[in-house]
Image (cartoon, rainbow, N blue to C red; front, side):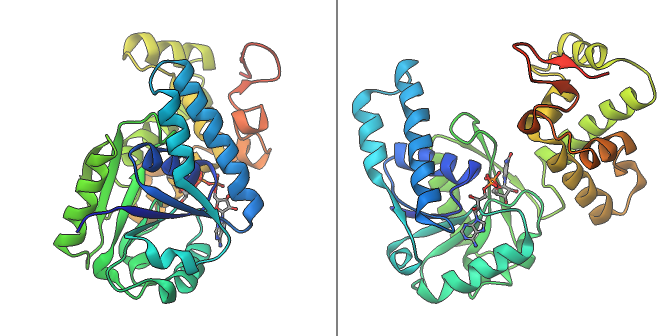
Length: 291
Ligand code: NAI
């Protein structure tokens, strides 16, 4: 099976990025959120990101306008009947995702595949909320989707080989490199990355080093492009805490215990860059460590 037309549900950060990548690769894209205004705002954001790629010489002006023309904001599920693949990228809530599948599935022909961009919810459980578990799998894009090379592919217990091979070929066609993960909590990247970030927060909490010392140590001593605390602020401390809780509960191992300092920051509403305060303060021109 060949994927030509892609439906994307959720026009937030990830949905917009995935639409951008799919359209640049030549796919027709339908983009749906809870209102047409949100999808139209996402189109404007995508256009801004495409224009930046043109300025940097990565794509041509003709590629920018061709990609933009391929993305259509829609307000209901009826047009999704023409899609070969639908990728769900709505808010990370099992209840919201289940509701989306319940509304979507009656509109899809039997051959249409469904992917989810979830970071932490069981693929097998989400598949069971659809009418086609054998045509369902995890297609986990990294943030920001247009820049990151990797896509994690996760099969649920019922995912058919044909679904997997079709999606794998589609992802390679987007210019991405797939890595196959089993359906365990947080898959591969977050399973390894988040405990590292959590450990950096423990090091801060226990006074092993300051924010600046910990980030400098990991940048210059381990050649990480960003320090772990800087990265935590970028990801969002609420998202970091949520992922640690998924690991802690899903694997029932105390080594994944979220650091109390992370919990405290989230309770204070200091969520990182998006609230302009986390392990750094972002109100000025340069980020200033808060500890
Ligand atoms: P976001 O909050 O930017 O976007 C979510 C969008 O879903 C919002 O625009 C919201 O209006 C929409 N939405 C909510 N309920 C809906 C419904 N019933 N129908 C249609 N649209 C609905 O969130 P983000 O960051 O884009 O995350 C989306 C998914 O991608 C989540 O599952 C998340 O775990 C996953 N993800 C996030 C990454 C990140 O770094 N932000 C990285 C990789 C995956």
